[in-house]
Image 1: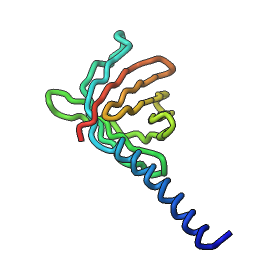
Image 2 (image 1 turned 90 degrees about the vertical axis):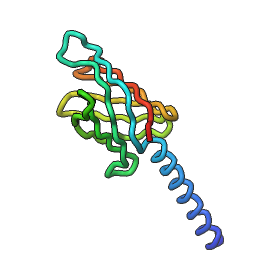
Image 3 (image 1 turned 120 degrees about the vertical axis):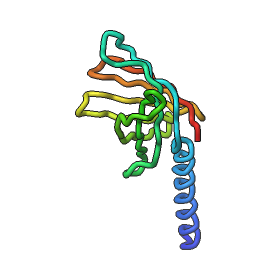
Image 4 (image 1 turned 135 degrees about the horizontal axis):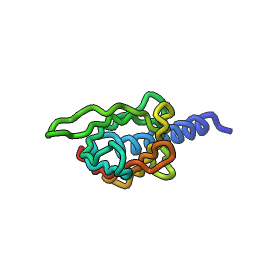
Length: 132
């Protein structure tokens, strides 16, 4: 095999994967706002307006979600979780083992919809739109 061809092919493949990762970044990174609706009405959870700030995670193929609920017009911190991105499904997944919770989100353009399962039970349905 020609050495120049091999190098050019390798660079092209690396550029393709870098562009693909960048498109995922632009799809997800930003500010998302919407609702988090409690599904277990007898629990202490409440319906909430939520704001999430998405950034690139520490590991390849991951994203960080800083979640806040809006109370009396002010954002209250609910925590940070790292999600794994599944490019084939445009989904973000996080298993929060200490809390026995599983978060799953599906990204469709500027809309992100997801669920929280707590101890195996559907606990919340989240619907957000990308603001910036």
